[in-house]
Amino acid sequence: MRRMKILLVDDEREEREGISWLIEKYKYPLEIMQAANGKEALKCIENHKIDILFTDVKMPIMNGLDLAKKVHETRPETKIIIFSAYGEFSYAKQALEAHAVSYLLKPIEIEEFQKVMISVMQSIHEESEEDQRLQTAELQNRRNLLYKVFSSGRIERKEEEKVVQALGVEQGEACRFVDIEFTENFFEEHEEIFLRFLKMYLGERVSYLEMYPNEGYLIVRDNRFLSGNDLQKQMEKFLRDLQRRTKSEAVVIISETVEQAEDLREQLQKIHTIQAELFGYGNRIISVRNYYSETEHYAQDAESAGKQMLQAIESMDTELISRQNRQLIKVVASLDNVSKIYLQNLLYTIVKAIYDKIPKMEFEEALALAEALFQARSLNAMLEVYERAIEKLLNFLERDVQDDSRIIQKIKNLIEKEYTKDISLNYVADNVNLTPAYVSYIFKKETGQTLVKYVTDMKMVKAKKMLEEGNLKIVQVARICGYENQSYFNRLFKNYYGITPKQLREKI
Image 1: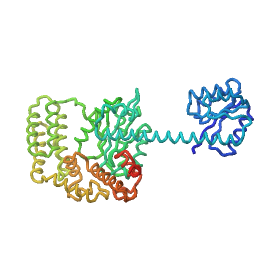
Image 2 (image 1 turned 45 degrees about the horizontal axis):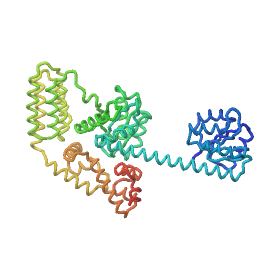
Image 3 (image 1 turned 90 degrees about the horizontal axis):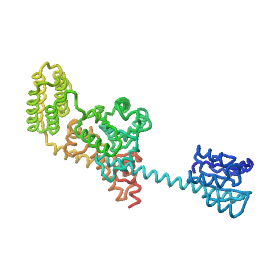
Image 4 (image 1 turned 180 degrees about the vertical axis):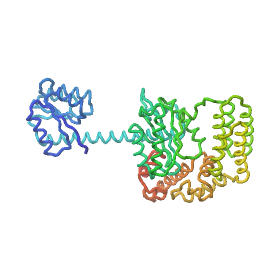
């Protein structure tokens, strides 16, 4: 039972000390405070959370009945016990009207005192436990709602108000959220370090919502980080130190400020679009604001043709790449007045995308192409470098292209057979003789989800089936599914199904 506060109010010091002595004698878990009249008592209650008010009736300045009525109006959760030397029925009746839970007569009978105190303390304890249960349930409901919204990128109209409440965004306040995705099952092993660094760099006003073993969202409410580049700067330090400790890399996407459900919907859509366009990790930090902003030397036709070319490269379709490449060169060659720096960055973005898509292309080779691109003195020289990169990509696709669907099926079979292990991206890549980057790309392209999400989904389905069959203990199910940390398994399971493994068993 938690330690509670009791306030003893009586104008006679001996009476207060007598009640204090009884409380200490019977070792009740109570912190004792005293006041000589109702006015003093009200001041004390304003400054402290009082669980039990134990007050006399007859006192100067403000009597106990008036005190009880005022306390009930402002602190209805406080339990009120009135004691008095006057045993008339009128006082007892007024005590009930003041919402007292008990009325004791002076001199206090020990057995009656014990009975009342134990009953009141037990009542407070039960109410506290119920409040805690309701708060825990509400917190989990909010987490489940945010999990659904962040994973799908959509908000139903009927859920808008609940989503805003779950974000902790009240009237006049705002937040930003950060998507952070690691290459491997990061959180199962490094969550404690992650949370410690998170508090160090972003302070107390940040919440963390785990989505998958390798991905989570941060909800940032600190006013210091709601505008400008301070949040991005802190995340750079955060990732740098996290990599030093864990050797893990991540991609971070930072939203703009969110004040209402409409803002959240827009930012989620943009983040999911960026996620679909990104490839690779390497501790990259991307701001939604900058990602979608127009450059000073913006050329609409070239920008549009460049994006279409990037989409063609993403598809790895040789015919589409050739067609979009011809269109891009035609547009670039027709430009009269456009920034050289803008064109260099546009073409470099495409060269970089080519490097990301060719597993056998050496970094030094890609670096040499990029350097030649920025050293080019004319538009023609720039296009010559760019076309060498395109030619290399097309040659690779024509020579080494594989049946992606066959590879994906092989990966799925591997996961189905070995889901009990800690299946990482590197482990899968080794088994299919491809680079991790290429496996990540084709798996997401063919299935629409990351490898880690697919593995986690399968583990959760298998776990639910085993739990429903009822032949194994929960800890055994967790280990079979590759989770040595049972509390982590329980939390991940609850994220998926809304109930813990134990609750599923009890339900069955």
